[in-house]
Length: 207
Image (cartoon, rainbow, N blue to C red):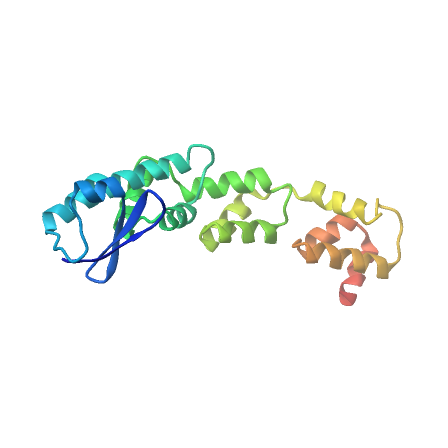
């Protein structure tokens, strides 16, 4: 393998490219210590040593630091490490280490998220948030069905903002309120139960 380019990443680190592809990022002092220079050949044993002893170790440490203040999904950690200049082999090794010791667990993360935010967000909002975090769609939906968070309080809060507190209103107004709730991500059934009127069923055709 040949070092075709060493380019600055920031004031302290540089990216090293081997055979035309990004290989890893190192501190400038490490580049000098390993005697890496553009145009020079790097032997396989030295490459493996750098990857194993320096880059992979640092990726694990960085991932643990990212988890220090808040839980993150595998997807979020992968994106953070990628943006930090870590190569794919180091990222995968770090994630394997974290999963082995249960520092990262997407199923547990998703369960905690639904339990914590289920009373504040609609099902659609919860699903969107979890999908953006890289949680598998089927897993997110399965956990929601299992936990079944109580959304009644949130719906009542939204209806109060609209001035509805359970008083008699016209079928047209109920249809508008139901449509409002459904735009916020609640199901037809949740909207109907919240408005709680036998006459409300007939409003469905107006939505």
